[in-house]
Amino acid sequence: MKKTITFYDTYKVSSIQDMLVQSASKHQNKIALEDLADTPIKKVTYSQLLENVLKFGSALNKLDIKERTNIAVIGENRVQWAITYLTAMTFNFVIVPIDKNLNTNEILNIIHESDSEVIVFSESFESTFKERMGSLKKMKYYISMDLPAQKDGILSMTEMIKSSGTVKLNELPKINPDELAEIIFTSGSLGRAKGVMLSQKNLASNLMAMTKLIEISSSDRFLSVLPIHHTYECTCGLLCPLYSGGSAHYARSLKTVVDDLQNVKATILLGVPLLFDKMFKRIYKTIKEDKVKSKVVPPLIKITNLVSAVGWKSLKKKVFKELHEKFGGSIRIFIAGGAAPDPKVAKGLREFGFNFIQGYGLTETAPILTLNQLDNFKDDAAGIPLPGVEIKINNPSSDGVGEVYAKGPNVMLGYYKNENQTKDTFDNGWFKTGDLGYFDGDGFLHISGRKKNMILSKNGENVFPEEIEDLLNRNSYILENFVYGEKDEKHDEIIAAQIVVDAESLIEYSEVNDVKITDELIKNIVGQVVKEVNKELPLYKQIKKFYIRDKEFEKTTTQKIKRYLVNNQSNLSSVET
Image (cartoon, one colour):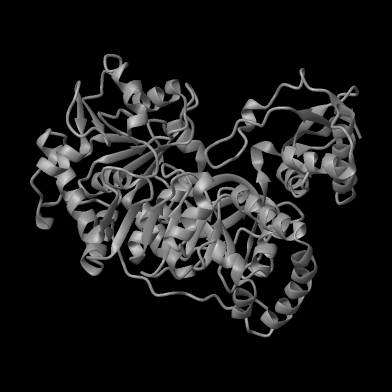
């Protein structure tokens, strides 16, 4: 029997401009955004945020920057990045967020491909743009977040805001919510750059829909750790708290997350699965190394599980209060996105009294398509479709698996200046996600893997590498891995894996067993892991060969392996299984 879906009250916003104005009116003197690092604009209330946006927009207008002009922004997560983004939305410009971790060539390529005429950047990119002012022909204005005053042809954002007049709310440009508002490039590589075009309607509809499934309130404090240029963090970690009257606080770095959680007393943390995996492993390692806790904690988990099952869920927070205090004592929800989390990690964190849920979406869908709810979830599922979002499985196989198609107000306008690619991505109005999945009997979507990554075994069976990668990654000796199809001597497709060993776990094994780490030892340990994983898989999915890698894979900012770069095993030693 399907569980009843709980819907929470939301309010209507027609655009991001509308959202900002409404939120500033409702939550005037409440903190909206805060940098935990020292920056020129460290903290703003809702009223101050709107005032900064109106002043920055006025200053841009004085430079004769017309409506619909493309404005690029690049830098670390900070209040000024958010002000730039919201100014573009409020003054009817088109914002182009750029990944700060791209190399110089990729950054320049995105600026060129996006037709940006203004770039707002943090101090770390000053030399990059100073040296190339002559080569970016379309670029009219360079604006630094950190310069206190104009210098060498670079404008100062803070000076522009201080010296500018303001714009009255009734003088703001009228927004057409259906028009292009944002271009997000999913790659920066020459020839591969693909700009996703989103409208303010896409973003506003996604905000209203996600907060119907998860209750976010004005008392929520988000700690922002994921790159803000990414749609997941930008929509869910910036726009969502602003829509709900909460606050976003920008962590100093990934290394300071635990300290920053304590300082902010954050209630919500968005992360990628890798972040929560590391967190959970650290918790268990601490327990295992403590003689008392290693004996006391397991039975406590069993007892509190039984009590929680009959409705007394708050007991876990009291029993594991010491652990909760390490994360600031106020965490209400951990939310995973960007990839599928390990169900064991989700269950494990929940056993310590933390709410843990996951969602699913793509940049092209602004980004959320499905969500689990706090009281209606499955740890191995992507969640249920958001209100207003339609999802269907196209051409399902006998086991119900097919490509996930989506339709809704959050689906992108298309790809920037690429009509052919846009046309190929839609099928009679349905957006083709490129993901393969199925619905279970309770209406939860399950993602099997990417269509383009699927391996066709020699007996014609479909193999999804992500499924095997997840199983391998659950072992403490595996840091990361990449599963793919490889031709054997008979030219049959076999399942192979490239594996990076977790150095910390290996060193611990060496010290406990008093053995020296050698290539042979590593191969034996990994071989045993592969054997254990193969036991959980049917014959056609089993790993037949693996390679040990010294270096980690090149990854995106959401920690996904760049699969298209992994194709050379010539310098790796292989092991047959």
